[in-house]
Image (tube, rainbow, N blue to C red; front, side, top):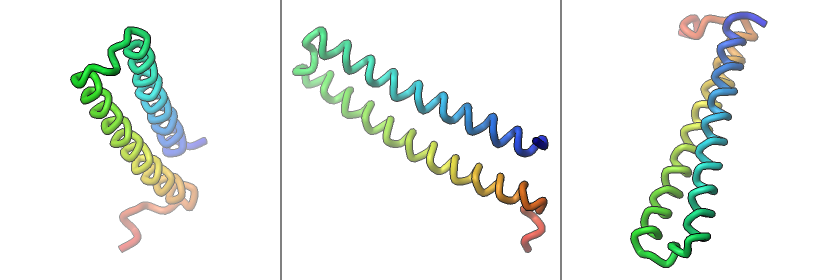
Length: 86
């Protein structure tokens, strides 16, 4: 495994860990709110909606990052410099 592939692998792992952490944090917060009976509170409902939107945005960012990493990995496996394309 070359240095470029190692960077791609590490970046992929970090991305996965961050995504998993964000999802788990949201689930835990939801479970706590449900257990405490606070889900009927309009403020909590608004906060929950905002958190869901943030998770969706994070998921899109992770998807975009993964696409870029896949592209970089393909270039590295071909042994091409991305600036040689032009």
